[in-house]
Amino acid sequence: MIRIVIVDDEPLVVITMRTLIEKFGSGYCISTCCSNGKEALDYVTGHPEVDLVITDVDMPVMDGISLAESLSGQGSACSVLFLSAYSNFNYVRDAFHFGAADYILKTELDDKKLKAAFDKIADKRKKEGASAADTGSDGIEEKRVSFFHGMLESESSVPPEKLSELYAACKFGIRYPFFIMILRPGDVSDVMQRYGSSLSDFTRNICSLLRQFAVPYGGDVSGIDYNLYCCIADNAENLENIYAHFYDSAWTYFETGFEKKISGCISSFDELVKQYKSVVENFLLCSRPVVRAKRYIQEHYGDKELDMQTVANYAGVSKNHLSSLFSKETGETIIEFLSRTRIQAAKKMLMETDCRTFEAADRTGFSNVEVFCRVFKKITGTNPGKIRQ
Image (cartoon, rainbow, N blue to C red; front, side, top):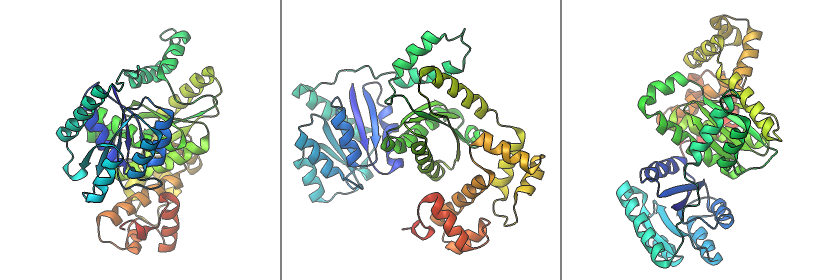
């Protein structure tokens, strides 16, 4: 078993790498994904069983060359494979100077080239006597899925002792007390329609994207089903931060929004079972008024006169009742949902068309460009003018 760490600050590259590697079969295990060299260095330092680090060259905080240099200085036994957009001789020279096993240009990357590099590294490690033994990490995701589904079954179907065994086999990288965040796509029917027979690929890719933002906060991630995901972290604030980053990227790469619910503090196994079951059972029951409200907002977000009363009238309930239902079932207010919908539409316009900032603001229902810029910065963390840079 070759245990791999992927290091790249571009989530789409990480998703692509995971997809390629998973095609190679059970001989390869992705231990974690990191967004910069410092995160990877910290992880490999604490996990000496890692066999291979696949890293980009140009990253924030710590670049790939510095990562390779640091690993070499620590005497790490793991191999380093560079994946870069740069063919500059100096980059290549420095990479091999610090022990790179191979150097692949992103423009030339395909499954055959990557597999050839893996085979070369595996042969070299075998000759050097490096350990490639299986540490029992195979099947962890399947065990986690069984555990999460088991918590929703009746006690007679999955007795407590069996659940406890499954939990131990899941090897979550976090201890009590912690919080869990349950996520689901905002429009499950749209996901089913668009992905159809490839829903398992959708699940895998969403987990990969979510993991990109969870790892820096010490979080752990599991894909329970295509319409349900779980993230664990030691405090609720970290989960909120993970969600904020993930939500924006999910819209960018998959054109899909996600809703969340965060549990209370969990200090024991019994509390985990109780809170998970409660959150999921309430979360998965999406009432007709909320479904109608979301659909109406998604179809009319460009209307400057759109207000709560109009949405409530379409949903067929009072404004106060809809407000309460919406927050309970989606984890955010109607105003927050409307703002996110508008900003994601505006971001797409700015990235894919030549429209100006004031035009994007006007087309997505904002009363003026000042309000638009303020909300845009709050949701995305950057200004509209920097989207095209």
